[in-house]
Amino acid sequence: MTKGKDISPVRIFQKLLQVLTSINSSCVLEIDGKGLKITCADDNYRCIGKAFISRQAFPKWKVSSKLSMVINLDFLKKVLSSNASIEEVKQTDNSRIEILFGKPTRMMLSIQNDGENDAKDIESMRTSVGTTIFKTVIRSQELGLFLKTVGQICDEITFQVNSKGLVSTTNFLNFTTSKLLSTEVINKKPRCLRFSVPTKYLSALLPVLNFTDSLKLSLTDNNIVVVLLQFGKKYKLRLFISSRIG
Image (cartoon, rainbow, N blue to C red; front, top):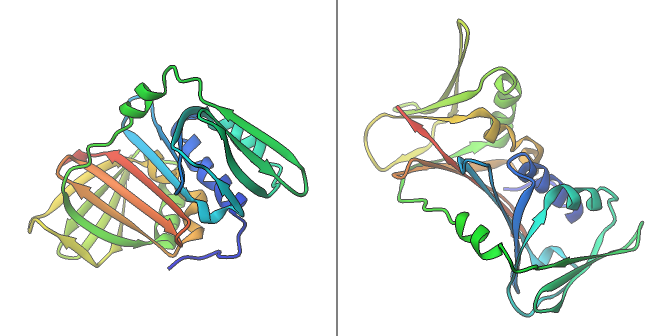
């Protein structure tokens, strides 16, 4: 179930970019007849973020072929900060797209593919996820409260899958926090699982947690934690985080 159905697409777009820029401001934009996808990775590829926005989120969408290009998210965030509505996205040739903004500010943003490093950058961000070991659903509000409490003091969050469900713990000096995040866990390997991820990647999700009631979290046999948030049929955000097992 999702919240904020009346929130403007530009507002959701802004928040998705806020999440991705906390990973890396340089990203790959892929656009085709279905919509646009933005992919970025941190410098050591510990975390890869992928946001998808359906063409249904835009009043007019005129894209006839697939385009890929490297863009800077910091600049795009500044353009969107005007809060002007996106009226149309259109492809003008094989290497250029234009985004037309309406009220309160009329503006056209043109993005050109230089074609030099795009193929290399896109290939480097392919994710070998692996087979899911366990999966669960977490209430967004519960995760948000936990991250706001421990996110500023702990570098790492440890998760444990046991008979109770999914339990998260953090350690700071002689303090330890523990929270049951979910009781409904599908564990395909009937054993206790323990893994850790850097807090900063999960804290990056805080700007978008209020757009949805819940999110999905899973672990694969490649030691990849996959976090999925979906806002209706128009928006999707996924993080792929390399975990430390044990």
